[in-house]
Amino acid sequence: MPGVPSGSFRQRSSGVTQPIARTCRTCGAALAAASRFCPRCGTPVQPEAEPDEIYIGGGKHLSVAPDSLSLRELLAIVEQGIYWWKQKLQTAEGVSRERAAAALKDLSRILDSLSQQLAQGRETVRITTNLPAQRTATVTCPVCGRGNRAGARYCVACGSTITPELKESAAPATTLTLQVAARTDRGRVRERNEDTVYTGALRSGEKLLATLLLVADGMGGAQAGEVASQLAAETVKQTLLATLQEKQPASDNDWQELLRMAANAANHQVYQESQRSSGKAGMGTTLTLVAVVGQRAHIAHVGDSRAYLLNRRGVTEAGQPWLQLTTDHTLVARLVDIGHITPEQARSHPQRNILYRSLGTDPTTEIDTTSQQLQAGDVLLLCSDGLDSYLDDREIAQLALNESTSPLTACDQLVALANQRGGGDNISVVVAKVGH
Image 1 (cartoon, rainbow, N blue to C red):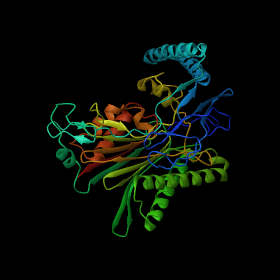
Image 2: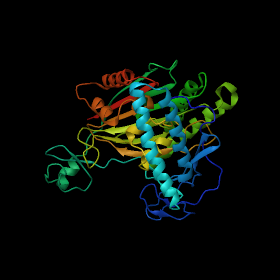
Image 3: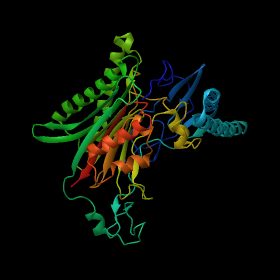
Image 4: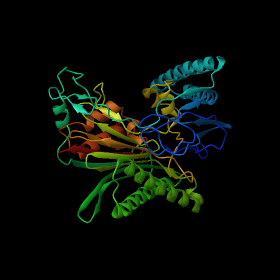
């Protein structure tokens, strides 16, 4: 992840904000302000967090609440983006000049839209991506192999009948296996690699407790980013192993709480280390980790590294073979979320690497968690933004799902293509293929 100028982001605003509606993260039921448990499903309610805040420069900030953005603050960001691309246009040539002109055109449209909304008295805009997405195609058609939603009676692709007996038989009857590989690369521009990847089994004697997959993308001056990502990864491993030796979680919520605890321990360690040395001040890292246990994948995440679920039979009702399981905690992800820019435009946005949530930059942080059912044919893929900045989701899925390649070959091909297209950042990828 490209280094962010000192002071260009921070987490947790202390400013006063308007109260927002809360919903249960499990069933979606409305919650009262003082609720400790969901009245519909009994899920514990996490304390309401203050909004994250991005410092943009010149005294300007953007507050990111769980479901809304300030239009006035967003307007300031767009204005700064226009200024940045105007500077580019004055010095660029050829394709770069065309790209700058196109960006200015897009941002001008956004500026006009925001101005009109403010003129109409609107002060905030809602965002929709609050929690990581869940697989929606869990039932495999016995005729064409297409994924369908749970409860489907007829295949959405070929119309074949899906009987209850066939739906039950679609679930693997035996323990799933994993073929895992990882690759991390410095890229073609950076002097050092500040990414850390880890894959390995967590065991108690001969008993397999979980398979851990992890990507951390460090940031900070000198070697601070490398220190942050390595320290976070090591803390997560030690915390999980020590806890699992005593007791193994019995439910999805228990696993998510364990991963959240491990990530918070890593946040504490990285933050404390950053306070001990001026050369490490402000260092931090992203963290995306997956614990695979039986047929379940439990995920914890903060920052803009990613976890994907891939399957050539489709993982959505529309048959799309990829699903991003994590939410990028970046400014541009929120701009995409509210429809002001496209995912393609986000790749070249001047603020595309500004995080509003990371690990180790503040005493506390908020960790996203979720769980996912796995089946044979699935591929779990974790990566740092050095990969998805150069390859789109379709390309990532196509290479990772190639049946003729091993997970290691898939990693090599993904890294090679990112380097071929510029390699401007460290590139890390983990590929885990699920089988019987």
